[in-house]
Amino acid sequence: MHLSLNQFVIYVSLPALGLYYIPKIQVSTNLLYPIGIAWLGFGLSFLFFYSLGKYYGWSKKLTGFLIVTAGLGNTSFVGFPVIEALYGSKGVETAIIVDQPGSFVVMATLGIIVATLFSRESLSAKTIVLKIALFPPFIAFSMALLLNFSNHDFPDLLQIVFQRIGSTVTPIALVAVGLQLKIERQSKHWKFLWLGLGFKLLLTPLFFYILYEKLLNASGLMIDVSIMEAAMPPMITGVILASSYGLKPKLGSMMIGIGIPISFLTMAFWYWILNTF
Image (cartoon, rainbow, N blue to C red):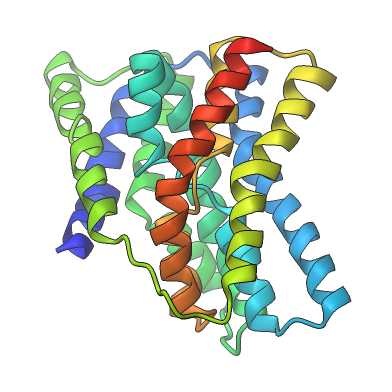
């Protein structure tokens, strides 16, 4: 059942949400902050785990698994409900920027490339381009972006339809996540699990907190939402991608099953940090 719910969110709810919000977003250089969460975060994951993998002699599959799963955040299935609860619809506008031109494009490009390089699969550049171009949220994102640049929007009736369909993201995503929580009690990879989760839930948001708020002196709702999105648990679709390429599927289910519940504690911590310091 969770596969059907995942597909509904990815192919229906997310595109509708993008079509409703993106034409209304004011395009500026400030959007680089939320977009940077996914792109810089994945690059940081690659440098961190590739270096450790080389130093400790990890298998290519383990290294590739950690790069992909710890480098991609669950910025939609978990992110949207959390951001909406904490920051309302204004926060969701920023969350969409983190997710669509950020997380899912990184997953569909760099994620696929890394999964291919660290497995025995081979994938042509044409196949990668087609995967991106035909991905429904990307098509919706492109259409909405064109409208944004042309200062147009959809007719009111369509906007209402998109808003209603897009509002299904939160309840359906929460149910889908709940159905996918699995924990393997006996596993030889517990230390790698905690390393991956520690990187994703603590080191990644710390990196962006220091970079955005302390070094670049940026602040405001967009920055807070971006850092909270950086603190999200591993992306379910990223784990599915890694598993489909044979990159530690059992460890992947644990990353989701343990990472998502723990993330609510670490997200509470980061929310406290952002509102205290």
